[in-house]
Amino acid sequence: MSYPYPLVVFDLDGTLVDSAADIAEALNRTLQDWQLPRVPEATVLTWIGDGVRRLVEQAFDAAGSQTDLDAVMPGFMRHYEACLLRSPRLFDGVEPALQALQARDVRLAICTNKPSALVAPLLQHFGLQAVFAVVLGGDSLPERKPSGAPLRHIAAHFGVAPEAALMVGDSITDYRAAVDAGMPVALVRYGYPRGLDLDTVQAVAVMDDLQELLAL
Image: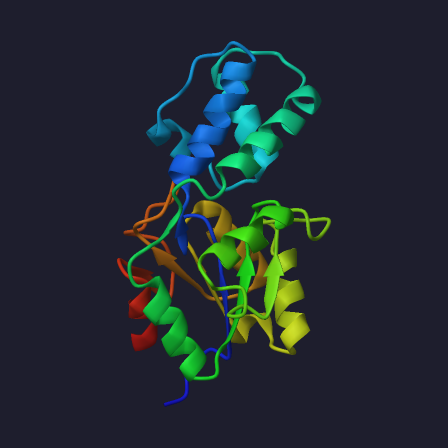
């Protein structure tokens, strides 16, 4: 059976991979480096999605610190890399959903705001590196989500009109990127959906399990 979308573009953290604990640990180690108190993982969840610099900026703002971010970021990136594979897990339903979409000859891509150098090791950890034909990180192009530019770039790579493809994400950042790109969007409930009312949002689907994509 053919699938209505020839191309599906996925967000990574909060959509495919539960990496919140590892991101929180990297951030907390960075705060400790600067003699600032650690913060709960639940708080860090509300800051994830707009890229690493914005993540660190929000944490230091919340701590009342005026430290220059340019001085903080190298240390954070070292911690981020060190914590990358501490305890990430695929959300339930991710592997069977990806396999089923592949079986229907759907092209799959990733559009994440995670630094591109850290995306490949994570995909390799789960044996997913061959699943995605295109992978864009937050530093792959001049613009990142919530700009629609990365989604338009991916669609153009496959020769697919943005409105014929599907974006799958969990956050308002993903939603805004899809709207800006003119791409239909499906959202998951289990991720880090700060700032997004999943009960009223205009989406193709709002899912508890990625396998619900197969019923579209």
